[in-house]
Amino acid sequence: LMEFTERVVALSRTHAAYLRDCERIDAGRIRVIENGIDVASFAAPGVGNDTLRAEVGLEPGQGVVIMVAALRPEKAHEALVEAASRLVAEGRSLKFLLVGDGERRAELERQVARAGLDAVIRFLGIRRDVARLLHVSDVLVLPSHDVVETLPLAVLEAMAAGVPVVASRVGSLGEVIEDGRSGRLIRPADSMELAEAIAYILDNPAVAGEWARAARRRVEEGYSLERMTRKYQHMFEELAG
Image (cartoon, rainbow, N blue to C red; front, side, top):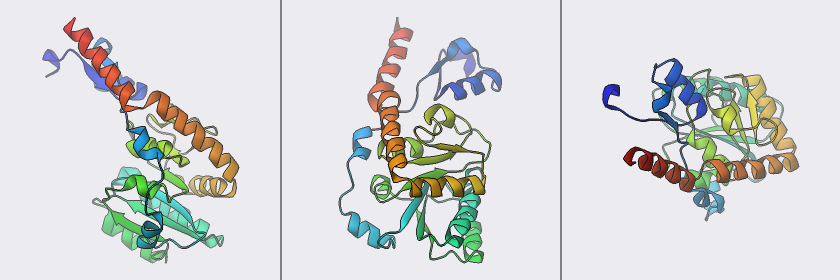
């Protein structure tokens, strides 16, 4: 098909380099157009949060960590389970919400049971109310292995919602998150660094607030639906011209 293709859209500069160097696509055909999200739909606090907190079993004063990702090997959910064990052993009152489903669910549920964390880690499956769940959460995590993370929408959505993000330093995440200014980047699937970063955010609400505000500005400026639409329109006009 590439013989007849005039443009290939990459979702980030990192993705463009991958397409050029690994897929051997001519650089002149590649255009970087980042996915955009409806920032406003994630900015407003969710309605009925008390009902939602009760539904997912959140107790008053509990810290809430959320991960929104398919239950696949490359997402490294096991690193979150190990980090949860460390944090709970420190005496912290926490709840971990895993949003998504997939091939590893049964395996991960067994890991959680062996660790005695059934009351701490909730498997919520596929949800259509991620924005509401983000607004009852204190931090979103994505501890992926060192694989191609092209442009995770869950990270953009959390940043738009004002939720601090801890993510692996892989793929395009270093383009989206400025470490120590709009979030925290860690070594891939490193449960110790993950636990430390979660603890830091929970223990330093003022810093977490600064990161969240910087992250929201980053999404507004670089990852809005409007910006994405303009870039697609420009590409179509370029081709038509």
